[in-house]
Image (cartoon, rainbow, N blue to C red):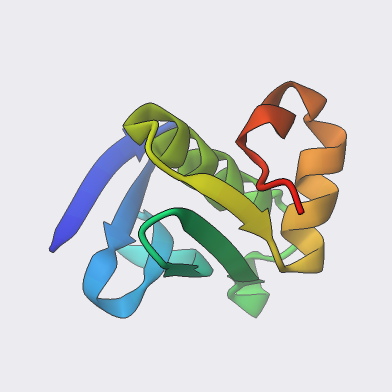
Amino acid sequence: MTISHTVGGFILTDEKDASRYTLTRDGKLVSVLDYRDDGHTVALTRAYTVPAFRGNGYAGKVVEGAVADIAERGDRKVDAVCWYVAEWFAAHPEQAGLLRTR
């Protein structure tokens, strides 16, 4: 199943079958956020931006969109496995309530 949302001129898609969020603009893949969902926690495992688009904050946009999607669903916690995702949460302490406690 695939679910898409428009986020600031981008399309954020949750490609559930591939366990990843994608960020596209004008039909071009810009950034990807891989995850594992065990039914209780979504482990955000790898943020990646296509080299031609790096340096524009797109990884932050895909993480922000994914976190907003997970928060909206309200039935999962987040495990920030990827270093970039962990840094994103550190810069957005207002989202700390979504993080899985260990």
